[in-house]
Image (cartoon, rainbow, N blue to C red):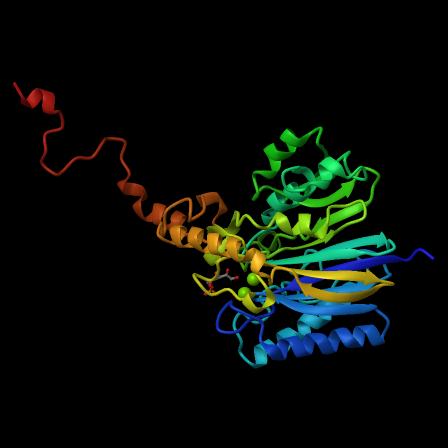
Length: 383
Ligand code: F6R
Ligand code: MG
Ligand code: MG
């Protein structure tokens, strides 16, 4: 019998230890207890709880489809219970992403981020869940492009007849209050796709599927500052990617993260830095509140249950990427407040620039300014 399973990954920053560094153990315990109650009440079938730096990640399976109000309420209530304890213990930025007062059916637009995917389970169903900290949804544009469109990353695009025809990509214009979506096809529209998704702050990949409609990847694209109307923290997005048997292999999926590419969201959401692929033991942001990092948890979905995880980046094979990433981080830090380490004015999450400009408004002049007392025109003074 075919089983339609849904994976819902819902995440929020409910507060963290010693600044925006890591989720404390007592928050994990509350989250696990609440998720267990969700299983007992038959809201979800299975779950795992993890952290990407200061973000709490609820990985849930069920058979209720995407956007299910009971599943979303369970996640919301779990975050609220964690927030309550976080406030009591005065841990930092308690309830940071809990932007609404009351739950209204779906966590979307209320602060937490979510990525959900439904599919009929294949004979065997390997997936990877990626969770990033100190960055934005567009951080996944480059790796997802590599996985599903770059033959130099994914050998299967060239030699596996099951996906030699390519994939479809759903691009979301994330800067708009009301998001707009565009479907593009690769390899036919590859250059046009790249023209858009290279602007990682403006366009984010939302979904990828095979040309026969088989879902392959989904990303949380919720933008916190649209919801709050101001900077409250980075989106710190998650992604779910299915692998094998007619889709890229797990090794091809992970290969795309070996380049620690530059992403926005480091320190105060206003700097760029390399995205380090790390194991769970290194899922904590320290240096300059970073550098931005991503964890990868591998599972088999089996009759709606999760088998795993495998801590996929906790491997010597990624040491070289981490070392390269730290070299890049070290170099960028030397630039201090200068671009391109500091983001362009429009992309900074906080800035003093308008206040600085207002302060000096009346001292701007269209005449070039020289040292006081100097003659204005040196050619005349030579006579
Ligand atoms: C938070 C983050 C941090 C903070 C920074 C300042 O997710 O990215 O870099 O922006 O630590 O934090 P506050 O404003 O709370 O003092
Ligand atoms: Mg935080
Ligand atoms: Mg975070």
